[in-house]
Length: 123
Length: 201
Image 1 (cartoon, rainbow over the protein chains, first blue to last red):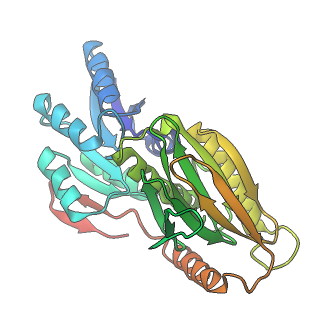
Image 2 (cartoon, chains in turn blue, cyan; image 1 turned 90 degrees about the horizontal axis):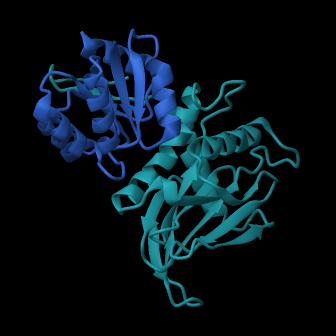
């Protein structure tokens, strides 16, 4: 079974993103920060399942989105990570790219845009 | 936003203009005036600081809920911008409480209108979904409100503006902000790094 990880400290946004991508052929798993996501990804993989994509906010307590990407990419160079955030500053976007993110989308997202980007990244 | 010295309290005061958001750990006042828009005051109860932002959902969203409504996404993002500042300063939304004001009738009449009702429905659904307790609110009605928020204590002082000439400059700016939000609902820009292209929608 393949999962899409939705990582955001806002339950409203997690639910909204999960609702948007629920029909793309993957199960959805939610996490409330980067550290929570790393634990859940590890559990998913230990059960013989895999993660196809992570959709991650930037500003979160405990472990922020950029730190998550850096940590996640240490052991997984291939699974794409899409940043979904209110941050639109060029420097922050470059930081995400350098950390290993595959894309950057600025909130508020349009459901069709998000679906189309997720489909492109999971090809 | 402008900063000045408040003579009565002897503290700095930050006057927030429509569309702006601001969070600070300073013992000060954040002040603003609202008519149709809502002012959201968030307080981090553990770290004892907070911030304030303007919120307007650009339209009514019928029977949809905030999870499925694209319009609600714009209101959510306005609050998210303030939340991001609070998180950057070390805060956690699990420690937040909220106080909300505004959403006055937009038609200058004395009866509730669709836009006002939609704003109120949005903000109630949002804070329920976020599990952030709303400690007090004053929403709807035909009057404007001037809000003084102390981010160091979470206290709010409210003044009802019954004379429409009061703060008329502020309300002109609020209308400009509302027009801007209603016209610019085309965000969701994205960049895919691997292909090195930028797509605008």
